[in-house]
Structure formats: structure tokens, C-alpha cells
Length: 313
Ligand SMILES: NC(=O)c1ccc[n+]([C@@H]2O[C@H](COP(=O)([O-])OP(=O)(O)OC[C@H]3O[C@@H](n4cnc5c(N)ncnc54)[C@H](OP(=O)(O)O)[C@@H]3O)[C@@H](O)[C@H]2O)c1
Image (cartoon, rainbow, N blue to C red; front, top):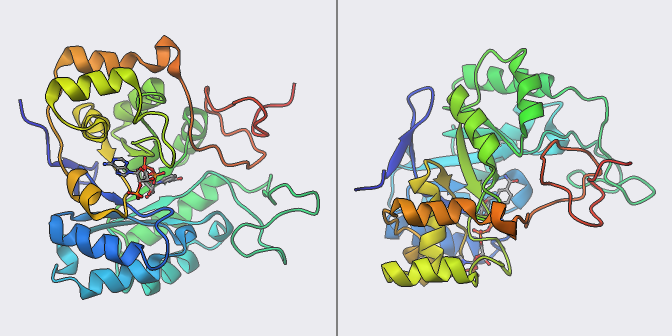
């Protein structure tokens, strides 16, 4: 059995199954990582304005020998730009030094009100994030549809959207999101969200597929046993798991040998997929990325102890 190298989005745009993540790739590191990735065969980069490194990513793309049209570039409209998506997109296009994106996402279903504390991560005087409780996400999506129609982005989608948020958006969407980029790994498989999205023709993209920084997954004994069986690394199992279940996967690395290694995807047998799909239900459910928005995002498993996102009782 072989694994797909590409998936086809709901508007027929083809997307490479594996893309290089660029979050937390520091200035001075990210350009090197992108240059190396493009040399070693990556044709998919996952970017965002809030990563504050799109300029260096753009330089690396420009300095590579790979033509722009061969690279699938994703970026995301940041929370403080939700009232003016076109402005956020213009900044990203300028930084990435391109005149179009292959995919543009709504980064979070949250609008932040910029203020004197910050234009990107503003806080209230009490230290909480300055979330706009009145902003309607449907108005953000309308603007996404407009930038799609302008031709500046080849596909549009969302990120960090739970089923209740998508159900609300569905009432007015004219264009169905092509993807929903969410936290996905064996400790957070999001089976119900995956099923809901598949029924609507929306692909899930796996962020934090390795468990992010200081990952609890890379040392998991059951992942290690499967890795041993196939004579590959745990990282290869975690990346392959996503492609085998029909999800696009976005491993991040700035380490050249890992960048090379993370392009490898192998076919996994049903019994091994069953183990990986069942780890969370067997008691290992865990999120690794829960920013403190102070807002109920509607994910069933979002709320860990002490997380201010938890609904008030
Ligand atoms: N939409 C969103 O809200 C959102 C949120 C989070 C992430 N993302 C996207 O998803 C991407 C991936 O998520 P992530 O960066 O949080 O985490 P990740 O890809 O799960 O893990 C990255 C970490 O794993 C290490 N690593 C990479 N390859 C490895 C390997 N083969 N063996 C052992 N360790 C390895 C990296 O270290 P080195 O770099 O030092 O090699 C880094 O510390 C992000 O970069 C970003 O593009 C999106």
C-alpha cells in the first residue's frame, strides 16, 4: 500500500501532504531551514504573520532555485487584522515577496482589539487578552471570500475552529473552507471534528504533529514500539500517522537532518493505526497548545487544569 504525496482540496487545488512548519523558528534560523527544505524536496511551507518571520521566509524562497509556482505557501490572517483581512494579507504578501498565496487561513476564531500595549498581542489592564466579544466571525469569513475572489489566494480555510464554530459559519458561508488547521497528534486525534470536516469536504491540517516543543509524544512507549517495528524514528511514525489517516501534516524543524528526515512518510498497517487512533481514548488525551484567550473555543477537550479558557461554573 502506498501513501499519497498530495491531497486535492475542495476547489481542485493540489496540496503536498507534508509541509514545513515555521512557528518558533527564530530569526536567523528560519531562512536557513526554508532554504534547506526547498533543496531537500519540500514544496509546502506553513507560515503566519504572527510568527514574525515571514520576511526571512520570503528571502529564502526568493534565494532558492525553486520557481514560486512550484511552492505551496500558506499564511494566516492574525487576530488583530480580522476587521481588515485585505490589510493583513497585503502585509504578508509584501513580507513573503509574492503576489499570491496558495492558502490563506483565519488563524483563530477570535478578534483581538489592538491597543497601546501591542498591535499583535494586546492585553487589557488586568492582563487578560483584549478579545472583542462582539465581533462576528461570519464577517471575517465574508472578507476571506472576497480576497479569494480577488485571485490573491488560491484557497481559503480556517484554523482552530471547533464544530460549534463551524456550524455557525455554515449558516452563511458561500465558499466552504478548504481546510481546518488544528492541533492533531495521537494524544489529540479530534475524531469528531475530523468526521464533521470530512463530511463537508474540509481537510484537517495537523499542527504540532510531533507534540511541539518538549513533546511528550516522542518518548511515548507505544509510539516507540511501532517505530521499532518499522525500523524508523518516532517522528516518522507521528508524521506518517497523519498522512495515513488522510490529514495534511506540518512538522516544524530548524535542524537540517530532521528537516530531511521529516519528509519521509511510510504506510502503516491497520493494527498500528488502531493503536495510534486509540491512545487518547485509552487515557493519554492531552493538548500541547492552549493559548490563554480567556474565551470558550468550543473544543470538548480544550480545558486543562488552571486554563482560563475553561467555562466559568
Ligand atoms: N494554526 C495554528 O494555530 C498553529 C499552532 C501551532 C503550530 N502551527 C503550525 O504547525 C507547525 C508545527 O507545530 P509545532 O512547530 O508547534 O510543533 P511540531 O512540529 O510538532 O514540533 C516541533 C518540535 O519538534 C522538534 N523536531 C522536529 N523534527 C524532529 C524529529 N525528527 N525528531 C525529534 N524532534 C523533532 C523541533 O525541534 P528543532 O526545530 O529544534 O529541530 C521542535 O522542537 C508550526 O511550526 C506551525 O507552522 C500552527
